[in-house]
Image (cartoon, rainbow, N blue to C red):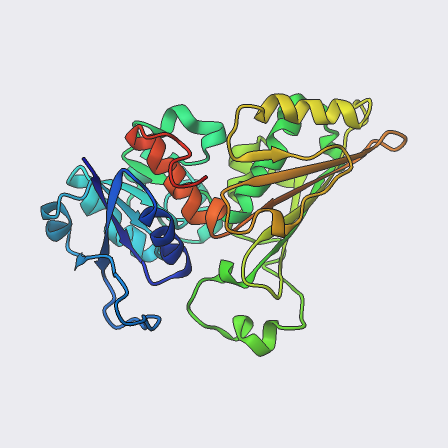
Length: 335
């Protein structure tokens, strides 16, 4: 029997991607939860089959028999919706940053505000399956990782855990994202005339995704520098991460470290030493591709990580987490 799931924020880019993925899922039926009737929608051809819609009240969602709700919404909307649903034993997968930072102190430090539901902040499970698969299955509230931290943590954690890094030299993450990462709501910086034929850095030394990397990679803030850049394309993230590891013997040793970490992971792909992935390899997929290079003379290394920010960085990873929560095959609807 199909399990009913719902999407709040289905008009946004991540919500639209969720609809595409869930339409091909064999084990769920999807309802759209209409919380902003005034939002503009894309025109549909005559005869197009739209998914059914229901009201956004907790009572209506419960009455519809929905078991899991995806919140593809800004943090303030997620903070409004999640607690009443959780109180009704409806499981929540939140794609915003509302529940990612685990403690009130972290939230206050990085978001400059008090968290209105600190109890749920502490109970939320961070949904990076490659690290926290065992915790995801029983989770009531699943906090889907940010797009930049997904790529950065998958690239960094095997290195940090190995103890081979020279952390005193610092790690630099040079990250670039397509414009869809800024969401569908228009702004000056995402206007076509501002983006096309252009390339810009933003949120320098103060990006909200930095604490997610620190909390899940094992790094401390002084050891990690992150700069985000806006690419003039619609989707995709490429991160080039620079480090020093004087105790690594050669590129083959580095490659084996990653092979052991991810050999059983269905959505992490490793390239041969010195071969680098690009955005086209991962667009419209749930993969994270990793490429490695290492200079034995200087002990300098580079890892390149690429994902689709709307799939592995948002909707695809959310469905991967749903599959784990509900006991479905992890790759259902994603391969």
